[in-house]
Image 1 (cartoon, rainbow, N blue to C red):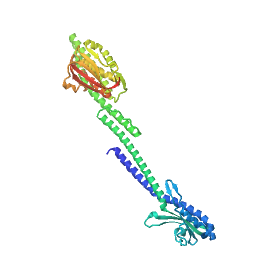
Image 2 (spheres, rainbow, N blue to C red):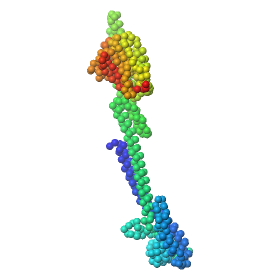
Image 3 (tube, rainbow, N blue to C red):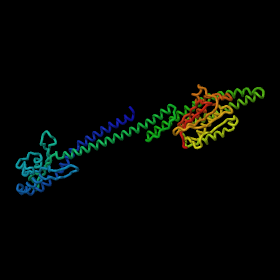
Image 4 (cartoon, helix red, strand yellow):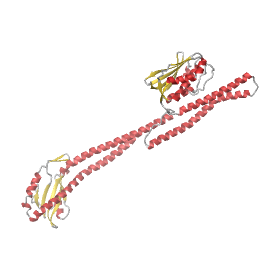
Length: 476
C-alpha cells in the first residue's frame, strides 16, 4: 500500500474517531444544557411571583383576588413569537400556589385547586426551607413527556406561608434541542470533512514529493540524467539535498575510477609506440629512418594530447545534469564560423561545402556546447570525405523542432558499425591514413544532445552519410 494512502488512512481514523467522540459528547450535552438553562429561568420566575403573591396570601385574600382570572388569561395567550426561526404560539408555563400545608389555592390550569401537593418534591422541599424542584413524566413510556417544576417560598418575614411553583413541559424545549443538534451535526460533519480534505491534500503532497524523489533516485541509479526536484518543507528538502550529495560523491568516485582505467588503457598503445621509437633512436640508423621514428613520436604525442583533451571535454559534459543557459542560437552563423575555422583543410582537399541553413533559423540551447558538438561532426565529415567531395548543411522543421542535417559524400558505413558509432572509443579507420581517431567525438555529440533533450542519428544515404541532430526550435 502506498505511503500516502497509509498516512491518509491513519489520519482518517484519527480525525474520524476524534470527531465522532467530540460530536457525540457535545450532542449528549445539548439536552441537559438547555434544560439547565430553562430551570434557571424558572427559578427567577418563581421567586418573582413569590414576591407578588406575598401580600395577598398573608392577608388571606388570595382566593378573592383577580389572580385567578389573570392566570387563566395568561394560559390562553398566543404570543405569535418567532424565536430564531421557530414559531411559539402558546404559553407553556403552568403556575400553582399552595398554602403552608401544601393545599393548592391557585392553579393556572384550573385542575388542582383544593388538592394536597404537600408530598410533591417541589412543595415538600420548599416548605422545609430547601430548594424545591422535580421532573414528573406525564406518560411513563415517553421520556419527553416529563414536566419540570421549580418552586419558591412565599415568606412573611422568616416564616414560610406558602409556595409558588412554575412548571414547563420538556416537550416545549424539544424543537430548540433538535435544532441545535441538527446544526451541530452539519457543522461537525463539515469540520470532519474539511479535516479529511486537508489530510488528503497533505498525504497527496507528501506522497507526491516522495515519488518525485524516488524517481530522481531511480534515474540516478540507472545512470540517466535527472534534475534534483525542488521540494518544499524542511525535512523533505534536507532529504533531497542529502540524496544529491550522496549521488555527487558516489558518481564522482565511480567516475574517477572509470576514467582512470579508461585513460590508462587508451594511453598504453601510444606510449608503447613512443617508447619503442625512442629506444630505436638511441642506436645508429639512416637519417630518413630516424626522421620517420621522430614523426611517429610526434604523431603519437599529438594523439595522446587529443585523447586527453577530448576525455576532459566529455567528462565535463557527462557530469552535468542540465544546461547552464538556454538561448536562441542562430544555426547559419554558427556553422559558418566552424567552416571558416576549417577553411584551410577544406581548400586543401578541394571540397565543395554548402551551408543551406536559413539565416533566421535558430535553436534553443547552450551555444558553447552546440558549437563543440557541430565541430566534432564537421571534423568527422572532413575525415571521411574524399578529395573533391561535397559536404552540405541543411535543416527540416518538425512541429517546434529542427532536424539539422550534415551530409558528407563518401563510402557507406558498414552495417556492423552503425549501431556502435556513438560508443566510447569506437572508431573506424580514416580513408586517407588508415588510422583511427580517439572514438570520443560522436559520444560527446550524443551527450550534448541528451542535455538539450534531442538525439543524434547517423545513417547511410544516397552518395554518402548523413548525421541528423534533433533540437528544439528557438525562434524564426
